[in-house]
Amino acid sequence: MSNIHPTAIIEDGAQIGADVEIGPYCLVGRQVTLGDKVRLAGHVAVDGHTTVGDGTLIYPFASIGHPPQHLGYHGEDTTLVIGKNNIIREHVTMNPGTVQGGGETIVGDDGLFMAACHIAHDCKVGNSVIFANNAALGGHVSVGDFVFISGLSAVHQFTRIGRYSFVGGMAGLEGDLIPYGMCLGNRAVLTGLNVVGMRRRKLSRETIHALRAAYRMLFAQEGTMQERIDDVKELFADHAEVMEIIDFIRAESSRPLCTPKQERGS
Image 1 (spheres, rainbow, N blue to C red):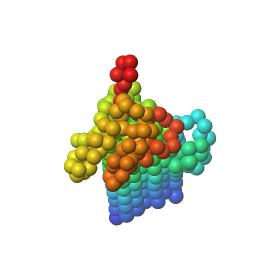
Image 2: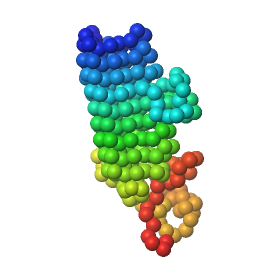
Image 3: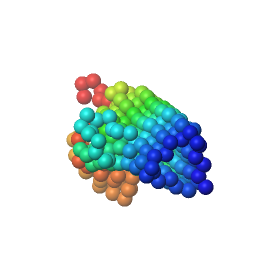
């Protein structure tokens, strides 16, 4: 049985699952769907064509599903889909998509979004991510599974962030970050691999060693990038994780690749 505080406002048409808790002074719009065991802790506003997956917990003053911050948006019926078992802390904002960007913002399962994070229109966010306080995504950003984005970081619109990667605190990321990579700084540069994160996620020693060797080859200063890619493909063809990086680099993108800082004169 759901537990809805008498001060909460639930508009006609909203779909409320089983065992949902809606705390004081929450607002739930007419096109909202709340899955089973969703909990809105109080003073939460969920609006628009928004779906919140089972078991997700949203803390006070979060703004979920309100119109995207985009001058080209004129009230179209676009959507925000949030997966299961997420923790969304205070003052987080998540916006639906735009017609220009495909019309849908998607957030995966099992994520932790700390206070004041922002997920802009048309973003695609994977599973088991962690966004620390005030991390912000511009529109159309793609974030893979198991990504950690540190506090006060900002990600440029249309940027891709590969699986298992790490964005350091106060980073300004303007280029695509390879899977398993780590970037730091404003403007962010590639500083190596997210070895700590890979160990925490129980990747094998063999896999980590292969990724480190491939990384050194890919971002060496000898030869062209295409030559280095060809060498890595030949040597590490049996390592799926290395091939994931190669596929990421070769994929079509509107953003440059985030690379290591070049020494003066190189």
